[in-house]
Image (cartoon, rainbow, N blue to C red; front, side, top):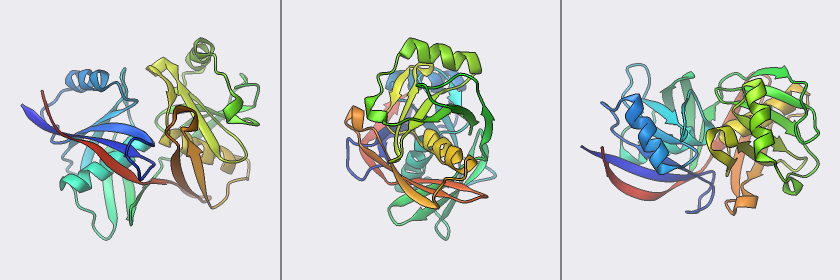
Length: 258
């Protein structure tokens, strides 16, 4: 059976920048095993599957090359872009509602930028330092060990050591940031040595800053420079909510046979 397919670059307005996500549209009838096979085949950090929902505008299931996630940031933005562009879903008064493993999430469409209201973060300290810095274990669906370092560009990560660290505390990966809101995210346990531009990681950075009383109300983070992707992530932070935002652009469009 042929299914509509798009590959979207997220957190950019230029093709072949930002972070790509594969989106399979009209995914009704596909079981989890088939979805995981497709995600392994695309070999992107995430692949999503659009389905109908009886409690939201659409349902999305999100897979890394190795497992399903309840929520992830850049796949949420990219899937919303694909759903609108394909006519699968239509915003009402600039709003969409997404049904996913983390529950029903609210999205806002503001011109070319899509925002998603993040799931409430669950935060706990960990004893193990990350690149020598104090870290928090922050759960927003994916779980990121999050820390502030002097300069993310100077890091030379030891991937086996990061894998052992994440396994020891049941974390998805490590996200680090510096004072200029430059961000890097590493998830070698999931077959993703470095995520080009990580939405859930940026949510965790905002949660880290808010936890220590240092979060600005709005800021733009940069990620992916070391991989030639150079994405831009729009963050909105208040005491009650964290919103993740970014633009998206379609790079590949067609069908796949399943």
